[in-house]
Image 1: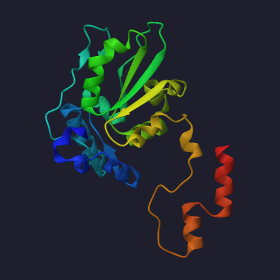
Image 2: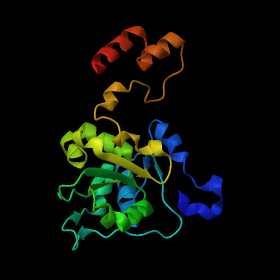
Image 3: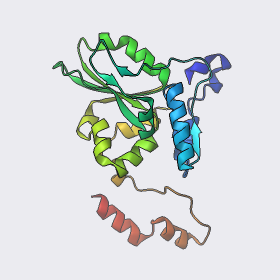
Length: 217
């Protein structure tokens, strides 16, 4: 990200995640700090899955964890990063218009926390720390109740996504909750073969397309 600014404009690494994000069989992990990096690396080794790990070379802040003495909320342990996203700060309940900041990147988080008191003079802010949209999608599928407690379908209307890189990395948090059912595509590598056979394997033959379209309605 911009942390590598001295390397020149083409070396900031702002857009490489879009490539790995689209590749089947590999997940992109972007931990907020050193503690989350450790947790996510151990998690990847436990699962035995290939990952693309996005970390910063320059020194970056290590987020404070535990009860917040000034605001009365508890910041989750770094282990929460393996869910792909977690609630860093809940709504204050101050009666002001609600906004949810979905933040990806440790320095972005540090910068937002610096201006948070100013933002909350007119808004009720909830902060979601995003470490891997793909892991969060997995959570939505396997533990929907837990995923909804992090970001409910109803809350998506309030989301503003902040990422120090390719904006599309966080589009999943801006779209309606049922977007996956309405996005029909190919999510895995296919076999070689005649076009008709490969289309059938991909589920894009006429019969399969009809079934998928009707299911998505």
